Length: 158
Image 1 (tube, rainbow, N blue to C red):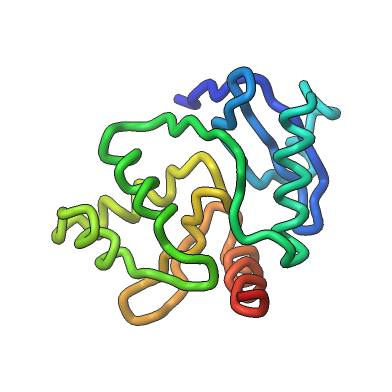
Image 2 (cartoon, helix red, strand yellow):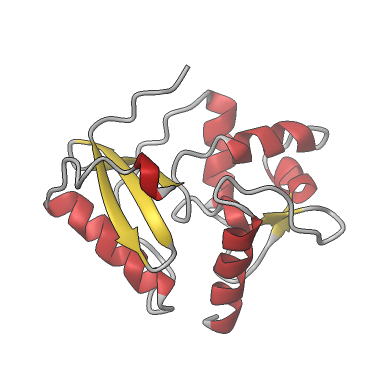
């Protein structure tokens, strides 16, 4: 069952289409979508325009931190994982195992992977910075090509 993250707005970014969802002026989701999933402009407003502007600044290497209020909609465990992702510095990576240890669940690497997969706020909650223990790039909801681009972008602008 899909969660209702609130009104949606679509924007074409340098890295493809994104769908932004919000509750009032709080961001609840950023998802990369295919063009055939775009439904016009959606419910754009001043807030979604600002989210888009900050993402575009990030995509061209002019922003490393976001100033956007977030509402993380998930289980308490997922929220704990997503908050831990936000601690990973720009341009750096952590393994699923390192995240599990950081949140004091050292045997929960698989559950970390599941929470990462279900992260509703791509890029700002940087699940793309999580890699396998052997340094391999693992799944990303936006695709491994996009994960590679985001990591390369951050390395180049660190």
